[in-house]
View (cartoon, rainbow, N blue to C red):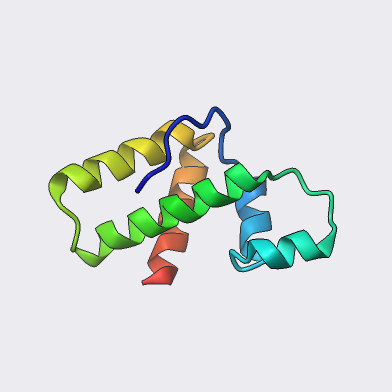
Length: 93
């Protein structure tokens, strides 16, 4: 479920843009804004939020939870980004 092979980092700015459009990549694309977020970033944020939501629901195995949390730390620019991802995933549940 969690994407692998991405070299980019998720930043607070990318999360701000993702939130601004409510996770709707089509709406973002139609806006024609020249924001600093790629389709790969967008999909990675969505995958992380989905995985973290599953973990927070209590339905994830210990292995899945460990992989999701490790991936989040791996791609987050810093602790603030990790915390914001956790906050956003709680809003999804």
